[in-house]
Image (cartoon, rainbow, N blue to C red; front, side, top):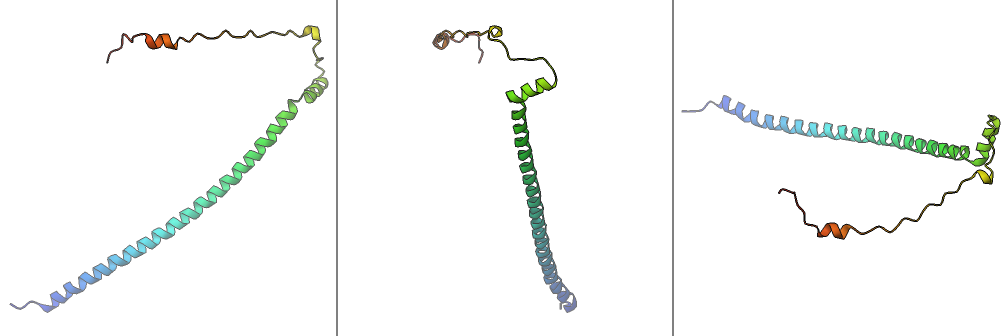
Length: 125
Protein backbone atom coordinates (compact mmCIF):
# COMPACT_ATOMS: atom_id res chain seq x y z
CA UNK A 1 0.00 0.00 0.00
CA UNK A 2 1.10 3.47 -0.75
CA UNK A 3 1.80 5.79 2.14
CA UNK A 4 0.18 9.15 2.42
CA UNK A 5 2.76 11.73 1.39
CA UNK A 6 0.98 14.55 3.18
CA UNK A 7 1.30 12.97 6.64
CA UNK A 8 4.87 11.91 5.93
CA UNK A 9 6.04 15.38 4.97
CA UNK A 10 4.37 16.86 8.07
CA UNK A 11 6.28 14.42 10.27
CA UNK A 12 9.52 15.32 8.56
CA UNK A 13 8.93 19.04 9.06
CA UNK A 14 7.93 18.65 12.72
CA UNK A 15 11.24 17.03 13.79
CA UNK A 16 13.60 19.75 12.52
CA UNK A 17 11.30 22.51 13.79
CA UNK A 18 11.32 20.94 17.26
CA UNK A 19 15.14 20.69 17.17
CA UNK A 20 15.48 24.33 16.13
CA UNK A 21 13.09 25.49 18.87
CA UNK A 22 14.95 23.48 21.53
CA UNK A 23 18.33 24.73 20.29
CA UNK A 24 17.14 28.36 20.25
CA UNK A 25 15.65 28.05 23.73
CA UNK A 26 18.92 26.55 24.99
CA UNK A 27 20.94 29.40 23.49
CA UNK A 28 18.53 32.05 24.81
CA UNK A 29 18.51 30.45 28.27
CA UNK A 30 22.29 30.38 28.31
CA UNK A 31 22.45 34.05 27.27
CA UNK A 32 19.96 35.07 29.94
CA UNK A 33 21.91 33.07 32.55
CA UNK A 34 25.16 34.72 31.48
CA UNK A 35 23.69 38.21 31.75
CA UNK A 36 22.15 37.37 35.15
CA UNK A 37 25.51 36.08 36.44
CA UNK A 38 27.30 39.20 35.24
CA UNK A 39 24.75 41.44 36.95
CA UNK A 40 25.13 39.42 40.17
CA UNK A 41 28.93 39.75 39.98
CA UNK A 42 28.58 43.50 39.50
CA UNK A 43 26.11 43.81 42.39
CA UNK A 44 28.37 41.81 44.71
CA UNK A 45 31.37 43.92 43.67
CA UNK A 46 29.50 47.08 44.64
CA UNK A 47 28.50 45.48 47.95
CA UNK A 48 32.12 44.50 48.67
CA UNK A 49 33.36 48.02 47.93
CA UNK A 50 30.72 49.53 50.24
CA UNK A 51 31.66 47.15 53.04
CA UNK A 52 35.38 47.85 52.57
CA UNK A 53 34.67 51.58 52.88
CA UNK A 54 32.60 50.92 56.00
CA UNK A 55 35.39 48.78 57.47
CA UNK A 56 37.98 51.50 56.77
CA UNK A 57 35.74 54.09 58.48
CA UNK A 58 35.25 51.83 61.49
CA UNK A 59 39.02 51.28 61.73
CA UNK A 60 39.63 55.04 61.62
CA UNK A 61 36.99 55.62 64.30
CA UNK A 62 38.46 52.83 66.42
CA UNK A 63 41.95 54.32 66.17
CA UNK A 64 40.60 57.78 67.03
CA UNK A 65 38.76 56.43 70.07
CA UNK A 66 41.85 54.49 71.14
CA UNK A 67 43.89 57.70 71.01
CA UNK A 68 41.19 59.49 73.00
CA UNK A 69 41.25 56.76 75.67
CA UNK A 70 45.04 56.98 75.86
CA UNK A 71 44.82 60.74 76.40
CA UNK A 72 42.11 60.39 79.06
CA UNK A 73 44.15 57.75 80.92
CA UNK A 74 47.29 59.88 80.99
CA UNK A 75 48.38 61.04 84.47
CA UNK A 76 48.32 64.69 83.41
CA UNK A 77 44.71 64.45 82.23
CA UNK A 78 43.63 62.50 85.33
CA UNK A 79 45.26 65.10 87.58
CA UNK A 80 43.57 67.93 85.67
CA UNK A 81 40.19 66.21 85.86
CA UNK A 82 40.57 65.55 89.60
CA UNK A 83 41.30 69.27 90.13
CA UNK A 84 38.28 70.27 88.01
CA UNK A 85 35.95 68.10 90.07
CA UNK A 86 37.47 69.23 93.39
CA UNK A 87 37.94 65.68 94.59
CA UNK A 88 40.75 66.60 96.96
CA UNK A 89 43.04 63.95 95.57
CA UNK A 90 46.79 64.25 95.93
CA UNK A 91 49.75 62.01 95.16
CA UNK A 92 50.38 59.35 97.79
CA UNK A 93 53.06 60.04 100.40
CA UNK A 94 55.89 57.51 100.55
CA UNK A 95 54.68 56.39 103.99
CA UNK A 96 51.24 55.61 102.52
CA UNK A 97 52.62 53.24 99.91
CA UNK A 98 52.78 49.60 100.95
CA UNK A 99 55.06 47.45 98.86
CA UNK A 100 54.36 43.74 98.83
CA UNK A 101 57.10 41.42 97.74
CA UNK A 102 55.83 38.52 95.73
CA UNK A 103 57.37 35.26 96.91
CA UNK A 104 59.25 33.19 94.37
CA UNK A 105 57.20 30.10 93.58
CA UNK A 106 58.73 26.80 94.59
CA UNK A 107 59.67 24.51 91.71
CA UNK A 108 56.81 22.20 90.94
CA UNK A 109 57.21 18.48 91.39
CA UNK A 110 56.96 16.60 88.19
CA UNK A 111 54.08 14.28 88.99
CA UNK A 112 53.59 13.40 85.35
CA UNK A 113 55.99 10.48 85.67
CA UNK A 114 54.03 9.12 88.63
CA UNK A 115 50.75 9.33 86.74
CA UNK A 116 52.25 7.67 83.70
CA UNK A 117 53.42 4.66 85.75
CA UNK A 118 50.10 4.07 87.45
CA UNK A 119 47.93 1.43 85.81
CA UNK A 120 44.59 2.65 84.52
CA UNK A 121 41.72 0.99 86.41
CA UNK A 122 38.00 1.37 86.41
CA UNK A 123 37.65 2.01 82.70
CA UNK A 124 35.37 -0.17 80.65
CA UNK A 125 36.02 -0.71 76.98
